[in-house]
Length: 82
Length: 473
Image 1 (spheres, rainbow over the protein chains, first blue to last red):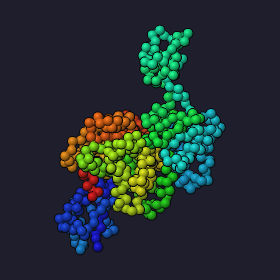
Image 2: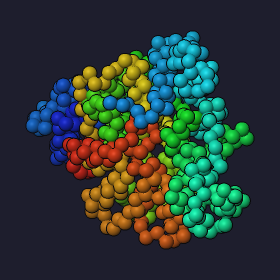
Image 3: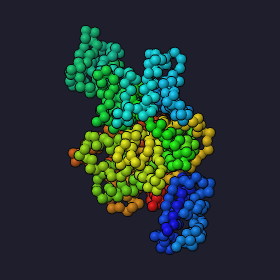
Image 4: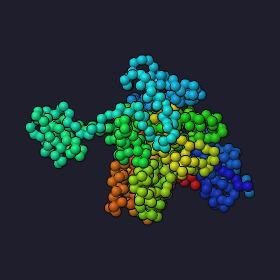
């Protein structure tokens, strides 16, 4: 099953760095050649603006920052996808 | 600080607010016929000959607030009983004429239309007069006046004429729904249909965005509006009305700028497709140039499409300065993308129907687009953004834009293109003078609006179009 990763690109998360999070995830997904196993998408607002940048992995919620994106990718995407 | 430019807008707002209040309370059907009396109580008329005429007209305004005549496809409609049937005799000599010796009026008239009576007072022979206006210009007493209806003067596409009963009539085959007449009529006799009831129904039916989410897509010209509050407070206000979130239409503009640049490089010549009134103008007056209209969706429709592609049940409400957008959403390629359009005037009415004082709210963020997407709101911004998109994509194309500020300039450029005399390879067409900030659905129009848009543009987090749209891939 394809893992669905959704990043909030609404205003509040955008200001907190959702572009860097999206670009980071795109980079690592390509680097690890996971493009056919992980579907990366965007959404406008998950209603948890204080916890941005808001990210969900198959509906499970995570709070990610541009600084923690590599760590997040390793633990929640790379380690769990197969 | 004043919320509106004119009292006509204020009256329209009062009707919209009352209709909205009743709709929220589910009492609209019950109280429909009482709304005119709620707005004009008492027995002393303040606007017309008697309160009964005032209320009769208000009844028509209520109808317009509820969507107007559904048999008429045009979103702009005349309220015939509100039309003052103002004189339209053209140039006439008024009693300010002093019967002077100079007779500049006679000398300047190329058609020999000026004669003088025994008191040396000038008269215009209507059978000879060509309405050039020269006599009016040279009269030292400003005694020659042009009696032309404000609606007809405002309508540069000549869609308004006088009906059998002397009331204003709109020719739908010519009208581009720009709303210039709506803003110009001093009696408020021409007005845009409102779809706020659809918006209220949608908001109620979502059960707090549980059943489906409603996204407000707000035009960048909002930066020049609601000047009595902060932009962030306006955004909080929109959310308080029950919208899931607010997105900048300017992000759609960033998307459009990128693909417009590529289409231009491929085809070599285009006219912009962002302004629905301009597109309609080409379709109705220059069918042979239709082939050059950009195939891009408008920014509103582009961002709406993105949202709906990612979320099937999403609903989109566009909030902007434009009456022609109400017509754009009826088009086949847009009607499934955008669910309703409302103006800033209508947004103000919705705020107040819920007693939302936006000045008392905290600020929310609004930051999706780049500088370039945001400056689409003013004349020249679209051409600037396309030039930037050409640069950012390293396209081998030298952009030579022709920026048309208002429908009269659009006409000149289109005529030149038709006759092969246009040197430019891109026509930026904006029907309203100043661009979207000149739209008929704005609360206020001011000198500083362009500066406000530019300032808002500079405040964008993303400095390039590519950065702004990178999150959309």
